[in-house]
Length: 324
Ligand code: ADP
Ligand code: MG
Image 1 (tube, rainbow, N blue to C red):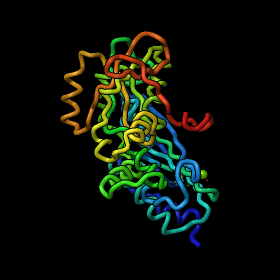
Image 2: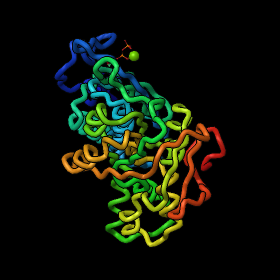
Image 3: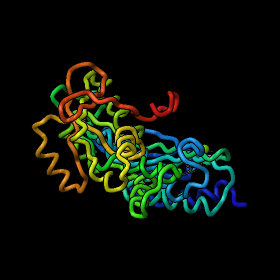
Image 4: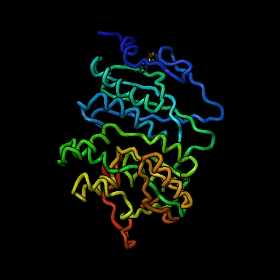
């Protein structure tokens, strides 16, 4: 059986491009570029909680980094480094090779140096810490939304939740819808380039990991405003091509997590710039609501006639009543 150090050398040591000292010493050394602030975030994936036993190792490798980069994107930070803390039940070479292949594919796509980590025996747990840079004072926060701002969402939220429903056998999809939605679930694309472009346009941002309504609720709370969603502005069209079940589509879009799209607010004067950005970046951007002053901390859903619609499921809460 290979030693711990041999496993690290074989699977987790790759050339770095912007790290002073990477894997192999007691700690990594990085140099920040002048004028930049360090942005740090960490996210854990635990078998049986975030993914089921038997999940493809390459997908896990990709996703464990991608979900962290999504947090950097939501702060408008440029990804730079990652640390990987890994607990594995046994040093299974085939699993490690596939996992690191997925991880480094994501690292390469987003120009991230894997600069170190820790490897131990234990129940399968993957904890990635990422570091990014943002010019001082330019990070996007949850607290910047102002009354009168528009609410926008990127991409096709709900697609990954549909994939989760399909993979757990709760629903049947045709082959094309299945592969589209499973792709969104297994290989989420963090909106890094979009996040950078939003530095000059957005007033607040968050990535959707727990559900659109739940995560927009965090912006509403931190900004002390009310986010008013307009049901008929939401991007239903794409989901409708994947499933005829409109109730399921509603659940997925409003409460489904795992898409790692960005929800953000921006002043109306930026509408044209955002639509132009959508075209050049090749990412759908949909204006889905407006920010009101009252009641602070709320998310409301209105129908086309302006009447309040009930929001049956808001999103995921690990320690709450699960689907809220
Ligand atoms: P220490 O005992 O000093 O913490 P380790 O033996 O845990 O050192 O790690 C040796 C080197 O390998 C360190 O540079 C560490 O950052 C790196 N490393 C350990 N595990 C991983 C991993 N899973 N991925 C990337 N680097 C790792
Ligand atoms: Mg260690």
